[in-house]
Length: 301
Image (cartoon, rainbow, N blue to C red; front, side):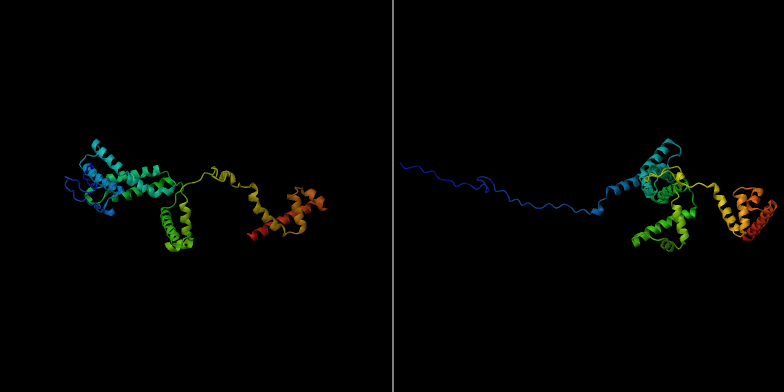
């Protein structure tokens, strides 16, 4: 009996369309295009924060204008203005970071200037508040350094000239790649070298060092312990030199009589015995020596 033959159905391609199903349209993946954003047009966090602060400041000033000074609401809005503009004070205080003064103190002084600027600001003049407030804040900080920080006060003109000397020094250092000389600074500012030196010395006069304070780092005692003292015999140095100069002009015998009388503390009687002369003769020689010394001293004077 012949084997039954079953018709072979060829296998369908997995990727091909299935029997009884509609062919799906071919899908083509296309690259996604994102809109291009100009980085300059996107505000940074600092810029947006500054814009928010300016908008808030304008709003608060608009409210403050309609409030009666001294009221609780006026104080609240005024305090909000101060708090909103504290970054402006910190920015101004950072310019004085090299003055070796606690930054908290500088910020407090700058806040006083900010309060004065808030009280005097007029929104109707069309000026931005930071532009108006910055000179007041910086001026208050400079006044603090000028009047309170310096323990050694210098003339105001010398202090202002010192600021110019400092700026010229920085410019010349950048231009020449080295520290400028006094002559170069004087030529740049059209002033004398003595004025430049005086300004440099004035710039160091912010604090007076205690004489009893120990020197940091080198382990040396205080400056008071290293200062010299006045020698009690110092006043006699000039006199001794003058007497030595006058004595050499006397005869040898009179020099010896003076040495025996005033250096060996011998009496005239002892001197007469030492020299083998009378006491009266010793007295006359001493009187004559004194007259010569006085005469020579008047001539030298």
